[in-house]
Length: 503
Ligand code: F0G
Image (cartoon, rainbow, N blue to C red):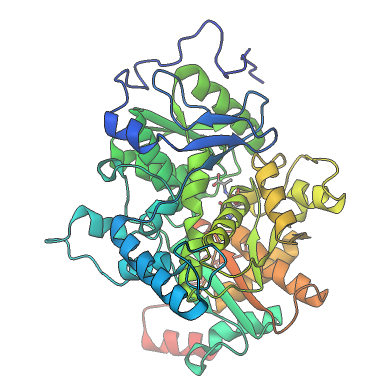
């Protein structure tokens, strides 16, 4: 395999960081510098702090110690909401005799935030008259922009994304008109169960939420090219958003292990598609080196801003539940970006008093690609890696990049990590598909994991559980789907059709 010498900044000693082909040499715009003045990147291992953006320097994806970084920012209510906060203060001082400062623990401390997000969600855009701001309000990511990224609005690259359904599928919370969906609750053994279908995003997976933020960063930094390694969904999303922003998209895929639908998306959206003779973990190592060497903006979840966008899954599902916290949040886990992101969203929602406590997290891995599960089983004493293999190609990952961030989420939510076999994933997928909702194989790990944890008594039958479905059924039209019998067509006569239906 290709190995390049890199120094602590990730740059080859003899190469210029900002190759003009990929990166604009123009300096950062003053509004960008001002907007990011108080945004920092903190190392998740040694806590070192770096400015989020630095004029004249290449973007930073790792700490000098080699660990990944986390975005830290101060959350400021927009001015209009400041008035609502004053009103909340007045209510608090009337009801609870509090002074002028709201502290995070008071009942109404989160209400100005809730109010502003609820107002934005309630205003559908009308294209001919909508201001850009209303269009941002309509995005299930940028609606929460004060908690996501301080980007000046003119740089935002949005489809828009998000606004995905939260399906009630529990035995108890499913009405008669959705008896098909109730089969999912029966299979899981849960009375109150919801599935949030991130496969309803513009390119068919949850990746669009991080990508709108990642490509916005690329735009405001003046990058001309963006790249990622991917098991298929990140690449499809990158290709789409890069095309929208007029940037060159470059995607590295593990050859032979990306479903045809995802590969077709990257090609159709016009990304330069490099299939690597190796697995995702090889592609990941290579893309990081190439991006640092050529000044291409890296858009894997190693990029901390992508994680900020994916937090919106957490904010949106909380809003859909009227800010009532479920007992459990269950999701499939591969590179661990999503576990990190949704965990961070809940932590921040708690810090802002949007919610009163944290749910427990359950991250579900495929048995053949379960390094995080193995680390959890050894009490996180040692970080495990492995050669990965599973039918759920989206999560065929043996050395997850966001390990440290995700570990924190499991530990601080008293969470669990579980593994499920390919057979269990496919059985769960068949139930989700036949309910009429449908999902790609990796997503079905969520339901397989819920069923297993309910059977073990870890999740209680009457717990309120939200599961994340990460990708659309159409992403993979082969795995776990009954294939039409070839030559099985019938003559175009009514007799032939009658006899076919009578079989
Ligand atoms: N589900 C689907 C459908 C995915 O595509 C992925 C990751 C995951 C779950 C796991 O999420 O990595 O944040 O833990 N897909 C990446 C990709 C690796 O390249 O599309 P994670």
